[in-house]
Amino acid sequence: MKEAFLIIDIQNDYFPDGKHILSGSEQAGRNACKVLEYVRSKKIEIIHIQHLSVNEGADFFLPDTYGAEINAFVQPVEGERIIIKNYPNSFRNTDLLAHLQKKGIKNLIICGMMTDVCVDATLRAAMDLGFKTTVIGDACTTENRELYGEAINAKEIHSSYLAGFTALGNLYANVMSTEEFLKER
Image 1 (cartoon, rainbow, N blue to C red):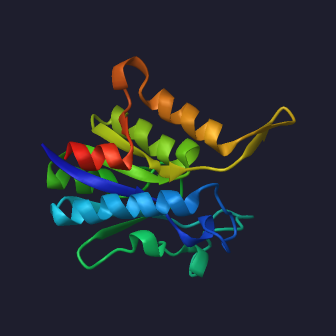
Image 2: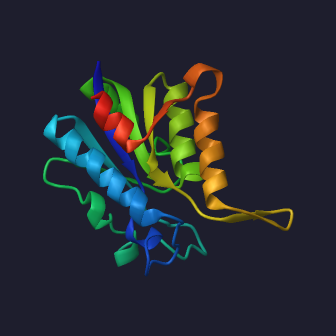
């Protein structure tokens, strides 16, 4: 079964000195880099998803800024596709689905940022569209949040979403660490 590696929104604004720094972005970036190196060596289709914020009031991922550029950990090389999106779901108003269908791809390997927003939206859409998905959990991350005046740690949010992806016998995705993924292959 043909597969593709989707790298979602690993962009400079999420890293130290960016405009929207995420918890653990550097470690997630390093893990994504390890998977990317492996995937390149196996000639698996690689698709970089790049978010550009075009909505009024956006303050990060602004077009034509350093912060919107894909981070050096996963810098695309010649021949790797870059798909620009403007919404959390990587399939919405992009040619991602058409590209995957044209290539006969049925399995997706996913990593990226943020676990609970763009990774989640893309993963759930992928399942609805009939794709079998593996998420590299430690090559994803998110940020601390607040709900009802209470702080929620990024690690708790991240872990909860990863656990949810595996609900009902891995309905949405098989979740693996970078090490597990590389060993299994």
